[in-house]
Length: 432
View 1 (cartoon, rainbow, N blue to C red):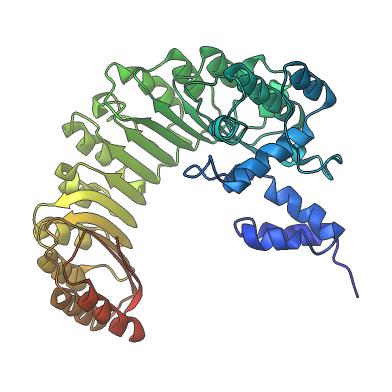
View 2 (cartoon, one colour):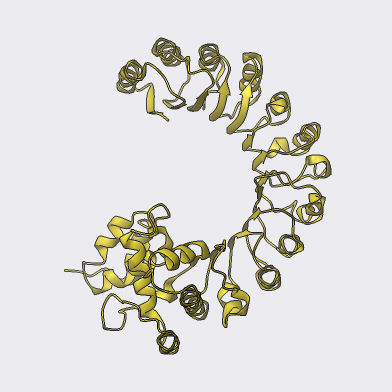
């Protein structure tokens, strides 16, 4: 029987990267299959970590046991000297250098695994030491592509002080970071990680100089998310670094960080995806869309006051998430203006009338609707009328429909849906 080469197996298994169950099965076939699949499984071992049930999750305990088994002798000795004796999967050395396969690091996941999956009789200082030694090992043995840097309030280990950190992070391409980390971390990243393509910063109470420097230092930034639960004043300092990336940014998300007064005049040549939430000074959004709307393919906003500007300045949208349409005239205008539109997510004040307008005026490629009910008044008869109208369109695609909100007639609605699934009018339906 001809044996597939490692390179051939690797090409095949790459298609299974998100199918962890199948990859786990591949581990058991033979040594070669195991060697190839284990590299992909350990690329992002934190995908196996369950945040909801981290304290009782068997996978979390298995992850920490394997990490401990991989610790070098000097780390084991240090732990023993501090009264820390941790269980490992076997008494034998690990079959592979698992840590060298890691391309993703989640500080948040390590925090919670150390806190909740280890023995509860360990002291706080002992848990800090365990986390420190695990991170030291990762910094020495890995070359990371993705880093999520969120620190737990109780356990902090400063990566900037760990040996090997510069080499480990020099090829970083995706970074998710929280503004409450030490300034030394921002400085380290700004100085040594200048080819990040996707950057997400979540702010706590203020805009730090470190975050500004981090954005400014990048050379190839394509995706940028600036997120805060609350609006942060004084965030005009973002304008200069954002302007620097006006020729490379493809995706921009701004959530409560700034008003658009200081950004409306900037033109982003490559911008395709725009997500704006809680951005003050709404009148400047119109000007921003006037400068940048033509290139947009996806737009998400919680500001329905710009619906008319969307229709006027964003003709090439394929996906739109907006707060609501005050009347069906706005919806009709957008459907007539945005001929490439494929999906909409929105609240409707009148579901029945809005569905009638959609069936009549939706562009030929439209197929996906997420309907957020305001009054939960949608009936199975309304839905059946919509499906019938959709079925009789000259040009149509099968619908993917999600209804969000309670309904008193779910059984009748599902009966209607099943009928039109069989007819090919509906491809997917769900009620959330």
